[in-house]
Length: 78
Image (tube, rainbow, N blue to C red; front, side, top):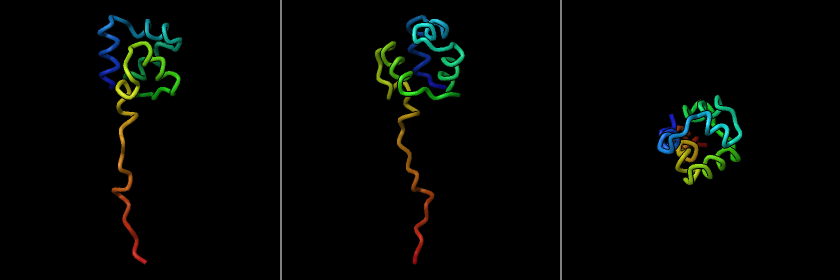
């Protein structure tokens, strides 16, 4: 769950339906984004950023985390 996203909505006393109408997306999509079941596209992230006045990197922190994908790679010796 994207707690920051949910908290910002609740802090403003908005329903998922109201957010959806404001952003011109479906309320089901808002619910799935908040639960972390779907990842928004760049345009949708910017809509949330504008609505809440908070950077997308903060609202969608999980999408901007750096991952070290090389941990599991073993170097091969020739």
